Length: 424
Image (tube, rainbow, N blue to C red):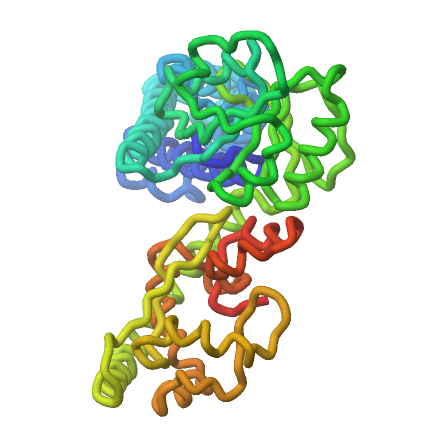
């Protein structure tokens, strides 16, 4: 149900479920014992045994019923039914050992409350999560940009699944295909045809692509698919293949479901997992504190920048972020207002080879700008970019589009992670 369904995120989902299970158990205990039911350690032994057995049963049955796999194309009715089955079976299994303690047997009211509270809480949690994801996707967020390779029946089924389920959060960038004399199905006419498979490198350079779905038959296009996999591997873009059709020795691979289409994920850059979720929480918390802490300094610097040279306080420049997404990077202005226009006339003074432009004593830098650069104070407004989600505190510096155009293909791999303030 989330943008990236992997093992680490499933663990987070599992822990949230356990929290709901525990809260439901305490609520049922309060119904049985009143206010004393809030104290877990004071409950009779059989109730503690019931809870421990229930959690052990949940660990096994939740995985058995695949509660933590991607259900983006699964009807909510079926998901709710699976949750109800798991909670019922857990309650049955947990009741068996608890009945060996006869001092205060488990009442039917307690068992009924446990099942109702836990089932209702778990289903309601999933309902809210689905509603939240649909809401943010309607506002244009949480989408994965997908390139489809191949125009055949497998690709057609995938495109149908995407078209019929907007909650999937997938936007098709376009379609590539091998040279063929066959007429493509009408469904493919709805998506831009970007050329033959040899255009893959060009597409990866010029478009935002998060995932590449390859539906070509392996036997006929083994060498072509091998080249595409290695190209995407070099750039750091995920590749998804129908299962049991191809094998490649990469560092990491997972199997996921896009509707009824099983695919193998081949990736080298980190996927959205609990570590990256924690990293985002740290980004938001630390950036908020830094903005509040340096607010007086920010105000003083803004006044000095405006008073010492004509032009705006902030310098906004388009940079490329995660997988080539464009965003405006904020800094305090440290150069004269027409610095970009003067860059061409100073190109012969560039001291760095390659796409980067750098001059030790750049004549475009203002007096206050030299101080801001030396102390890195000019970078402070980028905490706003971190709060917006365009950047992270830690990561490679975001390049400008003109630099990326000069990259060799393996250098595009630096865009496979969110850029940061710290640089490497």
